[in-house]
Image (tube, rainbow, N blue to C red; front, side, top):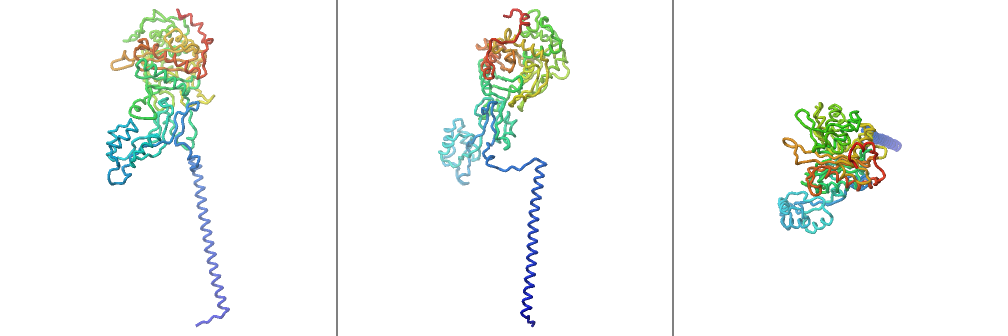
Length: 572
C-alpha cells in the first residue's frame, strides 16, 4: 500500500483541478463556437431570404394595427367621391343542427314553428321550403345580410341552432344605380360582372384597398340618364333601354345605363337574368345613326365636296335588291337635305361612290370591327361583314344595316366625329387633367367642323327636332332599324336610337339613347320611330345634366350654319 505524503497529495489535487479547468475551458470554447455558428447560420439564412425577396419582390408583410383597421374590400366612388360600393359589418343567419349535441331534435320548438317565426321576421322567405330545410338537419346559411334589428328578433326566438355569425358584407348605397357598371360581389368575396370584377385584385390587396377607387361616373348624371331612359321605356312599352354619356375629349363615361337593371344588394334569379349589358354587350343594327359617319368618311375622302350637289333620290337597284326610302322624299336631294330627311337612297349612292374598300376602312378606323374599348369584361363582338365587301354591302352599311355594333361603338365614333377627328377608347376610370389617352386621328379637323354644322341642322330642321333643348345647341341623328329574325327583318320590332352631342359650337359630351322594341303609344303620338321616342329622351336629359356638367343654356351662341342653311330649302 502506497502512502502519499502531504506534499504529493497536494500536488496531485492541483493536477486534477488543472485538468478539470482545461476541460471546462474547452467545453466553454466549444459551446461559444457552437452558439456563434448558430448565429452565423441564422444571419446567413436571413441574408439569403432578404436576397430572395429582392429578386422576387415578395416582401414579407406583417399585420399591423393599420392593416387590421382596413376594410376587407376597398371602396368604389364616383368621380366626386360619392360612395358607390363599400364594405360593412353584417350578420348572417346560420343553421347549426349540432348546437344541442348529436341527440334529439336540434330545434326545441320544431321546424314548422321556427320557420313560421322566421318568416314573420323575413316576409320574403318561403315558409314551407324553410320548414323542410330545417327538418332535413342540413347545416348552412338560411340568409345572408341580416340587419342588426332583425338579428335581435332572431335571437329572441330562443333557438341555439339559429346562429348569427358576424361577417363583412358588400353594400351599394345607391341601390340599383349603375348596377351594370359596378357588378356585385359573390359569396366567395370576389367581384362579378362589372368593375367589381375588373378591380377585384386592387380592392382586396392590403396595399391598395385602403384607397377608394374613383370611377369616371357622375352619380347626378347617372341618375338623370336612368330616370329619363326609364320614363321613355315605360311610356312606349319598350322591352329595354340603353344609354351613355361620354366626354368627347377624354373618353370618360359620365353615365352608362342598361334597363331593366338588377339590384347588386340582392342577387337572385331575377337579378341574374337582368345582368346582360345592352350598352357594351348587345350588338344592334343602329340604322340611320350611321349616315353622318358615312358622310364624314365621304367628305374626308373628297367624294363629297359640293354640298349643293343634288343626288338622285329614286330607289337604288343593286343586283336582286332594291333600296328605298320609308316614304318619297322628292326626285333629288343634296347632302344637308339627305341628312335632315334621312334618305337611304342618297346615302347608298354616296356610299357607292366611296366604294367598299374605303367604306370598310372608315369603319375599321372607328373600331367597328372589334369589341368596344372599355374596362368591363362583357363586351359584344360586332357582326362584321368580313374582309371583302361587295358593292351592296358598302351601300347598306352606309345607312346602318348589314353591320351590328354596340351603342358604345356608336358613342365613341360620334365623339371622334365632333371633337376634331380624334378617336379615343372609352374608359370608366376617372382621368386626371392632361392624362387623357392620345387616341388616333380618324377624321380631318375640317371634316369634324362640317359635321357639327350638319348635326345641328338635323336637330333644328330634321328628324332630331324633339331633341333640341333650347339654349344647349344639341345636334344629332335618329336611327330606327328593324330587328332581324327568322326569314328576314321583323317590321313590328324596332330598335330606336338617337345619337347626339352638345353644345355643338364646342362639343363636350356625346349622348346615346336607345329603346328596344318601343310601341306606338299616346306618349309617342302612336309612332315607333326614334324621332318620337328616343329623341325626346335626349331633349329632356340635356337640360338636366347640362348645368351639372358646366354647360349652361345660352341663346346668344350657336353653330354658324349660314353657308348651309340656304341649301336646306324651306327651313325656317
